Length: 443
Image (cartoon, rainbow, N blue to C red; front, side, top):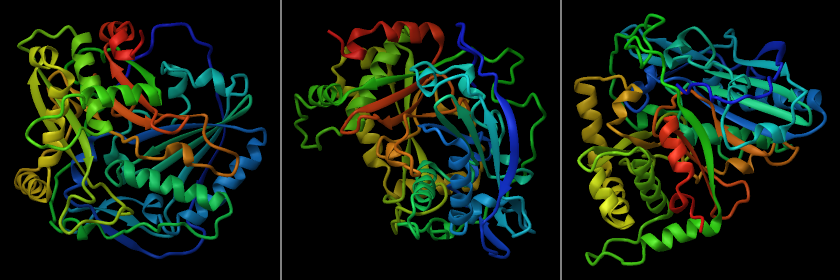
């Protein structure tokens, strides 16, 4: 979990004004959806938090429109209005019934502060107050909603904080839901891509887990120490900087005929090398690079893009910090490329079988030593999510599921090939990275 950023900031003076629940606008009846091997490891992660800022004057009208649209979109996405449960054999599932609470919607006011004051690079304690369910484990979805929304009135707009239960859906499904919700609010009679709800088509193995909520101190950092102070900030890479990173890594193509490095592989290598340098690692220190990769098109048979659930797996590659530093950026990019390319249907199946034979609930510290981990893709068109009052001014993640080295990639607001790198690091390393002109690509 990210600690407080040590600097003075204006308090939001946030006041909660209303709390309600939104259910699908039509009766659906009882529904049950078994969670599968791709979902279960995330039960001990935290709710996945997103934060979007919009400009606009008519806060009450915006809230009304959002709630009405939510009731419509929840007909198709009714799993988000349900809760976690277990069947008679102890297998986790999503349960929905018409008498369940639905999606929690909190309304709040912090109207002394403007949108532009909150869309700064550095994340702050203020942002935490705008998003629900901080430090709430996904397992708690047995007793609380699977989606919570907080709509906060700002001086000149609205902050939309969201917390999605990560045992129920991944990033691809999250942004598909957000896109569908925005389509309805913008006047579309229906969504362009209804969710594919049958998880068992991706993996039909029933895994029993004996899980109960941990004691209050059972957080991932439960060694008695205070949580480490971490800094979170966004580094914006313009289209021209992204092009430079990509062209540099592709300058001397490998002679073995492998494919050119993608933007993702080039940027991954760039960040991995410079973060390792900023951490002052010894040459012999290992460093792990982790990608939470979308497997919809990798599984056999492939699943549709609108598969609703988790269809991601963590892909790891490791090297010594000295090798990463001594070699040109192609070295890191080729390690990432090789790890991703080798993660085919056979590798996914083998990983699932291994997990099913000895289920292991992920915690962040499992990500690896001196880790850099990427958990979101710039392919998610987050700035295209328009509820009828224009594009978001800023999109970012909350503090949940952030640890030293965690990265979320978003497309830049200006579009094109620009990318925002949202990075969490220990303060000393972050301070060094901020001064690294080669990382920032500043002359």
